[in-house]
Image 1: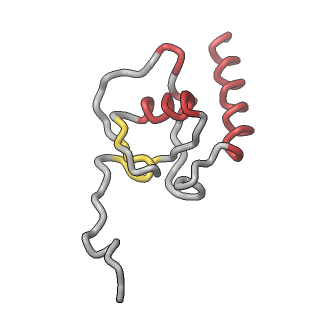
Image 2 (image 1 turned 180 degrees about the vertical axis):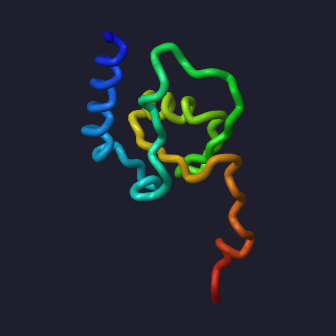
Length: 96
């Protein structure tokens, strides 16, 4: 019962706070990580289930992304599950 109350309060806090915590590259892109599913105070598992963040950094799992968001006071979202895709060599070429 106590854990349910803590979960509900944490979920409410995340819902109210996330609007102000967008990073420059993450606004409106990707999907929100399900941080309420993890007890971030106890750390994350070392299970490798990679996610690519909207900051184009690879996180070993969703919990680690959530923990980094909490520590850095950011809101990096999940760009895709799995490894980050390298940009096409033509995507950054200057046009003359």
